[in-house]
Image 1 (spheres, rainbow, N blue to C red):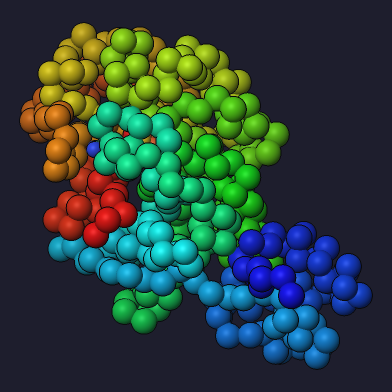
Image 2: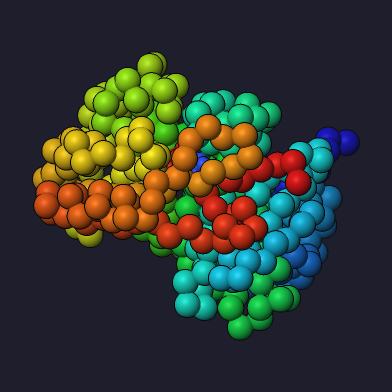
Length: 346
Ligand code: SAH
Ligand code: SF4
C-alpha cells in the first residue's frame, strides 16, 4: 500500500479530481474544505459526508501537522515557532502581532541555496524544499496554538513568505499553498493579503504573471550598485538587478497594489546619503513602497547595524523622492525571531 499522502497537499480542484476518479460525489470537496480549513478541525469530517467518502479519505490521507518543537513568546507578543517535520528537519515560523490580529511569516525551504552574506539561513545551505502541506501546516499549527493559548486572538490575516528559504526557488509548492490559502470553500484568504519576498530569482519571476497573479511581491533589493549587491546577494551575478527589475515592472498591478522594495541597511556599506539618492532615483515614479530593514546581527555575522539616526536620515532622503518608506521595527528580537535570524538548530 502506498504511504498515505497529506490531505494538505491537495488544492480544491485536486480534491475534486480525486473524488471523481474514485467514483465519489465531488460536492464533498466543499464540505471537507469547510471543515478542515474554514473551521480548522483536525478530526475527520463526518457531517453530511457519505460513508464511502469517509472511508476513502481515512484510507488515503493523513492530517498530521508539523509538530511544535519549541515556542518562544516575546515581550511584544511575537511568537516564534520551531516546527519539526516528519523527517526530523526543522523550520521556523513567526506570528507577528498588530493589535489583536497577526501576520504570519512562513518558511518555504529548510535552509536556502542563495547564500546571502547577511543572512543566517543562508549560512546553512539548502537542505530541502518544503511541500505544500508543510507550508500550510505551519499556518494551521500556529493557528491551533493561538486557539489554545490566546483564544480571543485566533486571527491570522496576512501571510508573508519571509521565513527560511527563497520561495521562488520552490515555486510549485508555494503556488499550491497559495491556491489552498485563497480557496473560497476553505480559508478564503484574499490574494492581496499574501506577500512573497524574493531575492530576485528570475526563473520564478518569469512564472509569476501567469501562475500567481495578484500575489504581492517584495523584492530584497538591498543595493542599487551591482558591486555591493553581488557581495550581499550572490545570485545577483547570475540574475542581475536590471533584469530583475524589468520582470517586476512588467507585472500588472491592481489599483491599490504596490511592489515592496526591502532595503537592508548595513552600517558603512550601503547606508550613505549617496546610496539613499541612488535608491530614490531608481524607484521614483514606480508603484513602490520601501521597507528599510536595519541589519539584525547574529552570532558570527560580520556586518553592523546602523544607528537609528542613520536609518531616519536615510528615510528622510527617500521622502524627497516621494516614495512611501517605512523603517521596519524589529519585532520579537528578544527571542531572535526577527526576519533573517531564523535558525533551524535550536
Ligand atoms: N528569501 C527571501 C525571503 C526570506 S528573507 C528573500 O531573501 O527575500 C526575508 C527578508 O529578511 C529579506 O528581505 C532578507 O533580505 C531579510 N534578512 C535576511 N537576513 C537578515 C538580517 N540578518 N537582518 C535583517 N534582515 C535580514
Ligand atoms: Fe535565502 Fe533570502 Fe536568506 Fe538570501 S536572504 S539566503 S534568499 S533566505
